[in-house]
Amino acid sequence: METGWGVTRTGEENTHEFPSTLLRIGVIRSVELRVGYKGHVWETGEAVPQRENGDLGAKFHLWPEGGWIPDAGLLISVSLPRQADPAIRLALSHSLTERVSLSYNLGAAWESEPDGDQDMDRLSVFQYTATLGIGLSDQTGAFMEVFGDLPLSAAGGPEHLLDGGLTHLLRDNLQLDAFAGIGLSQDADDWFVGLGVTLRLPQ
Image (cartoon, rainbow, N blue to C red; front, side, top):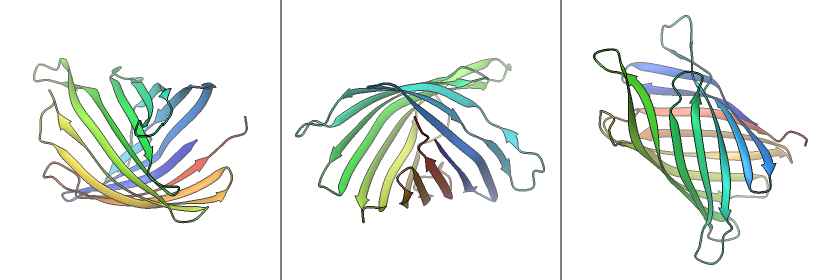
């Protein structure tokens, strides 16, 4: 189980999100069920936070890493309980050395938005992520990633962002992480920070 808090700065507004949570359940050897909840979101000056959507999905392990061929997985999900908007992503990763790894994801997501006639239009974006992970010790790691959205049918310009952070394993089943990042394009958030906890529950 993963959960955490984050704050994003856009213009003059700070947006807080808590508790953003993801529960991952191994079903069989190559299939993982994923249940997510984006938490409550509130902006500067708001007394009552807005409840965000959740999502239900699965990750399928396609094949293991071998030589120049990356480890591969396929993630699919649908948002709930409001409009059932799908998302799909191909997740790839390489072990560059014993302590350095490279992961990258490519996919697309759809989001329903009201149009001028108050009908719902389902708009799409292309999504990408590239992450470099470094093991600093047996308990501590660092990462840097670039990620973003490119509108396909959605309005607005591309959103490119850069962040980095640290992870620390307190126990075999308990990890803490912290991250911070900035926007690289005009339509991206100005900056963001967050803290997280990952807990592996007993089987």
